[in-house]
Length: 287
Image (tube, rainbow, N blue to C red):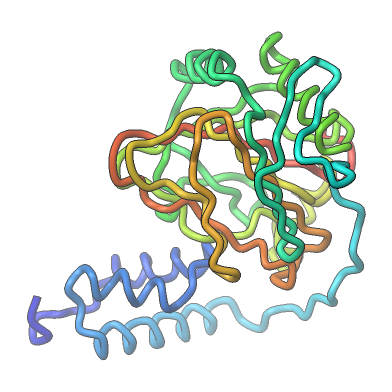
């Protein structure tokens, strides 16, 4: 694409805004535009002008004080490399990190449980949505290119068993968790870097928090091992967690703030499919 024909369209402006509001870093957006053939100077000017206009549209952003830290889920390993749970399941601790607080578990789910969970979810998959922070509802977002569905908490014996295992593993009440979500990423699908907590500055957050309060932890369980790509990335600290069937990555955030360094994303799947099950944990009872 020659620079003489590079016209900044409304569609491109909407895409730039969507990436920014999904939490993508400017460097990543610029790299994506350059990969698509945009001249760097044109891309930079388009980004700066578009985001300046978007800020003008939104008006002054309310100043939100840094909230105090709250209790978060935490596996009580006590220095052990393997945990034996009450259902007889053994879970290995593969990696731990303090900031962000990340724990990678090995063998959280068995192969049979992964297969059964995918089979239960498959007939109900639809295009994934994200939370609309302005309204508290949900919407399809270009930053998330996957198919997904939610189980009601405890709706099937398999779901009950997995949720009980998570509650014991993370020392967090079962009723403080959202329903289990299953996602399928096809080749090329990804989830741009974002935070899982609800931004206190957004208008819709107060409505969202009426059900269980703020999110304080995330557990992503890998239901298969894709042929290529699909890592869970933490851009702020350069961490990538490979998607391996049965394994899981847990991270917590004791306040809704970027200082938790829990910005994360799902890297593009380059071959095959990636299936994950995600459990979000709340401050209080989620009902």
